[in-house]
Image (tube, rainbow, N blue to C red):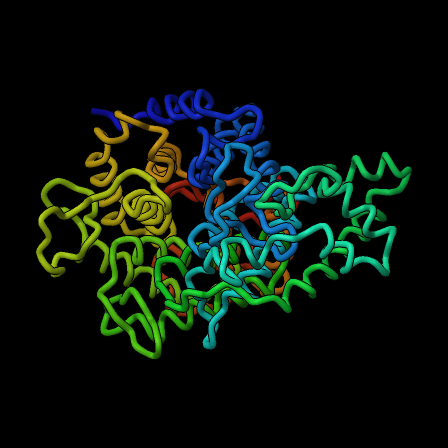
Length: 501
């Protein structure tokens, strides 16, 4: 049976049918962000020239960021909302949500140039670095919902607390009341969990002021509230360092670094990767968890797949031949330890894991993306980069193994559908060779008009230990580009104008 695009088209229809036209997102309460589905729609909008799909995704992202799912004072997203309108969250913050959402908001900014998406991506990245980074620069797992003996105790405000915080700035207090709708009834157990009620543009019109001026005043008020909130009892923090969840944040930071031109995010991602390599990669095998100085548990499919995907993102921020070598080791170990050699696809547990009553092979996305979907997509991209057809073959076997599951509910398989799209329509791989400063300018041009199926690798002229396919893309002068699709590449391109064309 051909691996055709029919499930992609059906998933697009299904997601629109389940779409909440009033509040964005899918379904009713409790309401989860489902970043895999939103990423699918955003990609589909560009790659299938389907503008309405993009509007569904961008509207959802605006609603999620403007209401209670997002921490309006400190940045970062909560796990889910108890209502369909995104007003009141369950106040737990998970690393595994914030990594994919960071990447998604960075992409949304790259495509729309809407400054709201930039701001939310930056604040989410800054939250992860400020509140979740462990000594050694990897990331902790989560923050509890409870603080001071009750859920939301860290995040909720009384009207009196807002007044006391801003009493020296009455004009700021008036704006905050309007912005967050504090002139109405409290929305959370007699207190306020802050949602945006009137946006910045509306406030600027109402006050006959510039958007920049209102934005600056609201940001000043937010900083005051943030400093006061920091003095409260903080939520408990789960200080396990998990390979898979860290990989999701590494990917998000790397994507945000390129889309937002923030090299410090790539630095944070690189430091987290170095921790994982030093602590959790031992004797050619990945471990799942670091806690209290101990490295424990053989890793699962998600650990390998997410980390491989993250490496491909980080390599686009800065080239290290050793990282490509690490990615190749991960890919080979993934096939060796997890592939179902008879039926295709990847088991969640390794072949030498303890025997289970049922050994799962998950194809659908759940709270986190499907390990099979991420593995298949990453193997396809890595194969096109490094020229290894065995990884393509494994990706095809995975798609065929998941085909029946995809047919039943295609919209539940966003990650696997993106792998299917890559299989049928290989994306662009742009290889730049030359001087780092010149390559950086060329790459920046490409990132300012991003294609969501494009990878860009800036490989210095003196890079060593390249696979044959990359070594064949030889440097020539200050910078030269090769535009590849699958295993076919263009002749050398020697000017930015020709590359743009």
